[in-house]
Length: 115
Length: 114
Image (cartoon, rainbow over the protein chains, first blue to last red):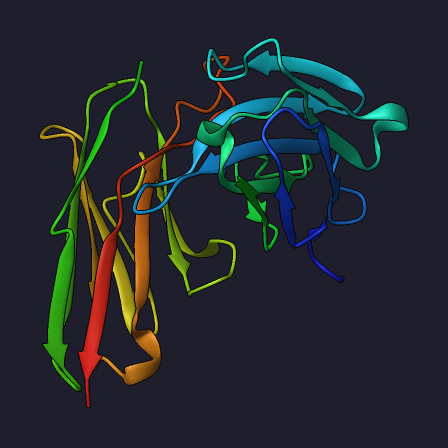
């Protein structure tokens, strides 16, 4: 069990550019979550997938944000036309619906800096 | 929606002493309450959790208590060690009520002084 992995770990981009992050969940975990964490705050929910279906989206997920999970395995989070306010840590978590599905395990995160 | 308040925001204790972090929640439908430990530059690590049908749970030096009537839950760390220094987050979710999102508190920075 290698845990949740995220790539890249760090990303610096200029305002207006597009960025894409990848999350690989724990193997056999069919539930996948994206959260955003700003400095000094707890993680805030962005979106949730069960297998390949995106079932819940937060109002924080503006139309510049899009998430996908083709084939129900890894997921990508894309931010278009980045703004300085998008600078944050983007966290991915996964869980299994076998038993205690609400136990969410987090990856190390991708830290985004928009200059 | 759910709102989780966490106190204190910072906590310093001497090594060997106990530390207590408290959280309150607003949604009476919430029934799962995990605690996460986050070290600098890392993602949150699930350390213990409690469900609404249980009042207390213990795992070695850490324990969590839940008071459903008062809508608050607490993390207790005994015999603190320097490696316990980190930011701790409480969270809540109304699992089974059609919600999949954890709502987190703002965190408590725990410093254990050797």
